Length: 171
Image 1 (cartoon, rainbow, N blue to C red):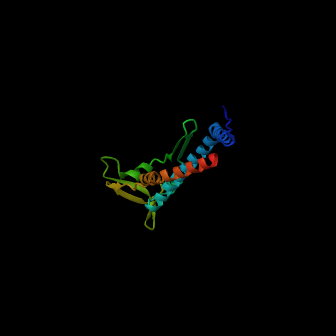
Image 2 (cartoon, rainbow, N blue to C red):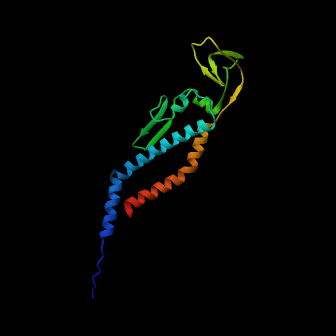
Image 3 (cartoon, helix red, strand yellow):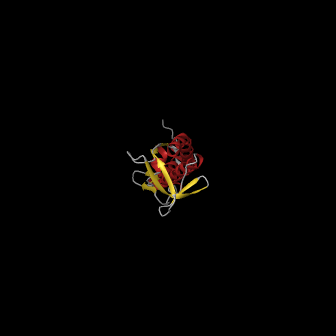
């Protein structure tokens, strides 16, 4: 005795087709867009922390944390999906980590510029300026703070994005 069992594989075939579409590049393209968005969000967090922590700045530091800004680092390597963001502004690390006002062994040095209110504007051509005594300037830790914020929000952002991708391919 034999009995025929009919199985409707329409939905299964549609699932396989969506899975193939995702594997053939759609998902990778979306992952690239997501990664770029995450990099832009990190730069925004760094900018927010520079402002929130009242980092004295000539705007070069703040502008360097925009994609394409002067001094900006935005390296994307597609094969391994690696995104490196940051800045090449030399003093960014000193402002973040802290620094001595003068080189080792130098007790004082003259810095040309002018005062505008309580803000000193460096101007190498100025005849006026200030004398810096050797002392430690504590870091503002703006970059470290932005990293901690991103690490805190990343799991939820990633989970929501993965769920969105799964829903778009498999529902």
